Image (cartoon, rainbow, N blue to C red; front, side):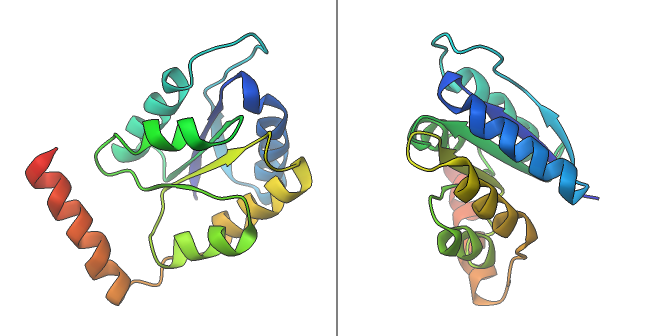
Length: 149
């Protein structure tokens, strides 16, 4: 069974609640790592712990939400082994799983609404990695990380 780590900063609370409801509907186990306030907080405090847990294999995938999704994406991708993709459409969500084997999805609450966020997350959660030539490319990224990070 898939396990998902989810978090947001103050700018992503509403969509995080929508995604948690989706995960419940899909029967996917998850842990919510916050935040629980609308007062300004720092997105790295939420993105980095989720990214580390995914990279260590404690969770299969992660979902991060902030105002634009950009900050969460930048922070998460600093963690070795993380391939966090910022998606604001369903097509990109599917392709980042099929071709890039993304293990964290980032979205921006100020960019998309809750309905589209659910569609994106559902597509991303249901799409499998194709492997093949894409695995070779992912391997090159991992090789670089192992040498330089």
